[in-house]
View 1 (spheres, rainbow, N blue to C red):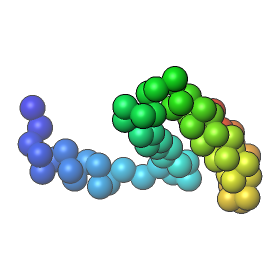
View 2: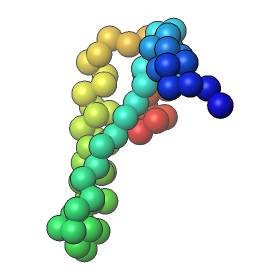
View 3: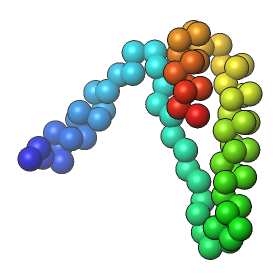
View 4: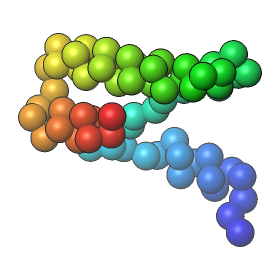
Length: 70
């Protein structure tokens, strides 16, 4: 097993070579789970980010990769 220091150094040395790392943080509290409201929130986030990402000036293959993540 690698040490914590080795794991952190590996993470810090990561270079995506022009590609982006996509993250999504979705609140799933009791209220959000009621009537599956989180699904609407998720769909709205994806739609907004797809529209927003077009203005980032990314290369076509990078933009396609990001959109596939959505």
